[in-house]
Image (cartoon, rainbow, N blue to C red):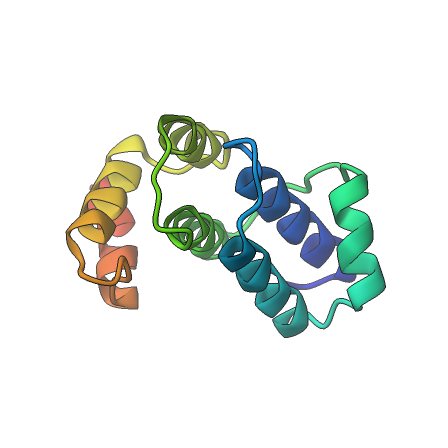
Length: 133
C-alpha cells in the first residue's frame, strides 16, 4: 500500500464485506482491528470507518489486488460460518477488482479444502498466474 488513502480504502472495503451477512462477529472485528494496526491506522479512524462509507480506491497492481482478495476471503472464513451472501459478494468483489473468475474459483476452492482455510502464497498467486496463459 502506497498511500494512507489506499490503506483506508482497503480497510473500508473489508469492513463493508464483513457486514454483508447482516452482522459483525467478534472474530471479524478482531481480524479487522489487526489489519488496521498493521496498516498503522489509529483506533479512532478505524471506528469512524464503520459509520461512514469511504469511496473505494481501485488498486492498480494485480499482486496487491490478489492479496486484498485473499484478505477478504480470510475475513469471510474467520467467523466459522459461510453465508450465501458472502460467497456471492466475494465473487462479485473479485470480478470488480479485475481478477480472473477462474483464479477466484480456484482460490476459494483451495481455501475451502484447507483445514484452516489458509493457503500458501505460492498457491494463491499460481491460481491467478495460471490464468494468464
